[in-house]
Image (tube, rainbow, N blue to C red; front, top):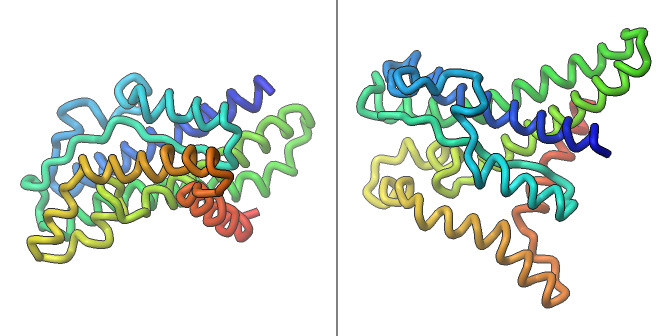
Length: 218
């Protein structure tokens, strides 16, 4: 139990840090050095940990025994004015995190299949367990961040190319987007539990999408 908990949180920490570094690195390649200057292209966890998204929320989900695990790190600072071609580059930067998580999931799947070649049975069991958690958590983060609600990446990927006032207003409505996500993730399921209803819409979406994608990788 302790080992599994450690592997789950290690997998989540690695996944969200690499997700944010991907945003920053692609932005750097496209002309924005903000993340690099502020030291956010580092793999040092202390530079990325967000108290709510990296610690409190994952701990709450683990204690609640939900069938998925996700969270977030401190967003990497991006200055769109420094990008070479706007809005194309902003959409590429937003896509980078999702692509990174899917790429990590694919890599974990490949290593998982090759792990049967390892002779040491104890090490093989631990490694396969870690790879499974790492794969599923990365897929879960990808499908979660693909939701088109600000400030999640999916909002910029889906609406970032639309040059209309309403689209720009929607993309930068972070405060309202966070409120919506809190309602969907926490408040609605709690209300549903009190009423005897299953209102965990986002949870079912993440769990179902993750399971579906995993079925092609395992």
